[in-house]
Image (cartoon, rainbow, N blue to C red):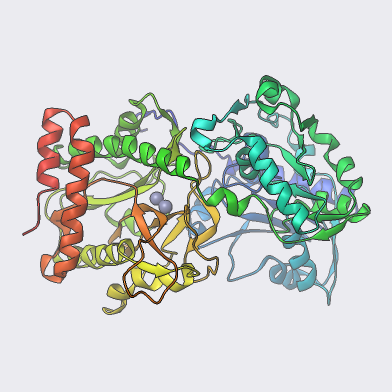
Length: 605
Ligand code: ZN
Ligand code: ZN
């Protein structure tokens, strides 16, 4: 039995109860049969479709034991499949009991598997837990069968006797000094846009969008300061918000005129009363809400979440606050790296590192939460890009191990995300070579100057060409958007070959190429970048161009660089970057930390 180690914001223990799975699944099967159904869908998601769900919505974990952040369990004709992506196949196997079958998604689609099991029958689903897109896709795939998807109450909630209640965290105002623009101004701008496009209203069901629009934050789920709510923005500037009223009663003054507060159970009735052209986002709208809109007199305009783009394009004040947040976070990271580099070999485990890093971040009064569970992976564990350490996987860091730490903080001024890869002792030349190729890609993105209109799909390759030239690559996108004291993964832009959303000034994007050798080691280097207008060049034939402004200032481990692989330009970029790290961070460090920083940022000749 390992000694219990405590983090305030992250747990290392397994909390699911796979041994109770068979009994609970049998009870669920009983409910399915009672209703004349042949199956039921249990997704990991809730009605708000975020990365984190409240305890009340942990139905998949309660039922099966599986604790991953994505997946869906399907019961059909006495077969039970749990669909998880490549990150989670091993974990799902370890955390569940037979007769659950682990199915690799999206290699095998939910509907293809159902059609393998049967070609007829009624499968129930809770219409709050599936988006319109999802259900439409399922229906399309099964249109030539006699399988029918049928809405029903949530059958897991019926058998879950001690199901926790919904979260009740108090909402709070996100002050204008952080948001840069008042909520009434945001409402005015968006409702003007609605009018111009001929819409009478827009339905917003993603809490991040509502939090942004109303300059409001909360604490309903871990690591993401949102208030669970739904909203309708009308073209007359008014917003109807559907929420547990006790959560927002202290916001009356902040809301002022034009924000009407209703209970969540009044949402469907209000949707039914809508008329005119109503803007919806089928990828996030719960199917239950869609059914009410279909029953209304409204025409639906499925052009997406109207808050997504304005939320992604940060204003000048938000950007300046984001720089503040990254400075605070960089100080914690530098203190952590100095501490790590002074530790004796063979003593530390991955969990020790997570606890220490959290303590450095927590020391700052501005720190609110971690922005996601810290990824701290050493040796072969680092080869799993989304590895999360727990008591079973925790390993002692050995001489020559690569250590990958991907972490971030929530500060009122912004959300941070940074990855540094380092090592204790001597590493192999293979590791150094891989590290250098990854670094070259990361620098290449950082230095880009590109025309307006370019999207992730146009730029992603710049992060990979050096790996490609040696037959190597990494199996994730190069970067994701990041919110402002909101989600660490925020759309619509992504730095990925599958993203065609053009970059715009003010967007924040991560730059995080990596390389993973299964069973051996993993490398990733990540900074966040803000997209800014580039100064016009003389004789330029391109009207408008953008450059990236780097936000994180934490040294990159020079001891892992194979200098011979770096060009003079790349070395110059790194020297300049390190000099900025020194200028920005040094004054906030203790004397021994300053010595480390000076050495870590010393110029490469
Ligand atoms: Zn990260
Ligand atoms: Zn990231």
